[in-house]
Image (tube, rainbow, N blue to C red; front, top):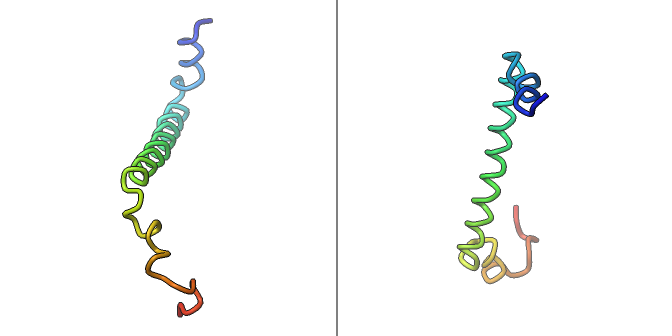
Length: 66
């Protein structure tokens, strides 16, 4: 049995299995793409984001937040 026959039998023979495979692949791609873009953005804008410069402007920590 070839890999294409195995793939067809496991994922594409039944409509619900194909739908689950498509949604699962879409979700995995979205998570991976978002994580990759966020890492690129943070690396590209290092030192210019609030999380990087917060210590300069806030003295004494988070004691006075209400």
